[in-house]
Image (tube, rainbow, N blue to C red):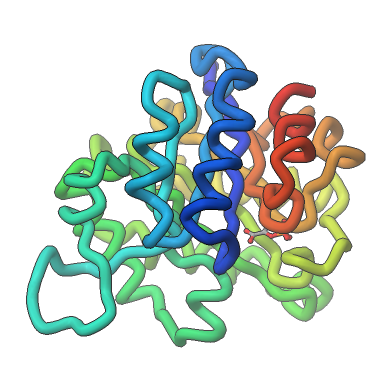
Length: 251
Ligand code: PEP
């Protein structure tokens, strides 16, 4: 099996002004792990990104966007394009977060178009796969998770899909304080890896990084990241405080 470098990624959502974001980066940037051992990423509101990239220069921190559109320019009021992010020095973007799907009605077709557009300019997408408690209980999880992966990664070449990171994020675990237990999280990530194997190959599936997200904190991160198919975590609430984020990163 290939070695997959783990990632700890924060997702601030709609939090932090530019000044707050820069102060955060300055506080953490000299205390991050060697990126050959573990990568550190932080996704932030669009307005914060340019200043964060500047503050993070020379450090291993990867500054990420939380969303982008599927076109590079045009009459799309309010949107940010993949090429604009790339030009600003951003190399990672979260796509298809469950809040985008639920509150902003993004569907798999749009998310797939965004993934393709992001990859075309060089961005590495972090594609989120959600799941409800109802589907878990009713045994509909397999069908749902497999369908999200097939639809969101539709028509990507093997070389493109290698650049994608997937985050398995059960909806009921996001922002609730109720994390999936490590077995549930491992099962979701394993299911995603098996789907990639069916779509592409075992070799490619072994190279893909698959993260777990949903109420990750300093108490549960070790057990979650200790699972075979979990290559890292996406952290919302607990990424907002710099010292807590550093504890998650430097366990
Ligand atoms: C998220 O927003 O992706 C997330 C996992 O949030 P939280 O850690 O707050 O559950």
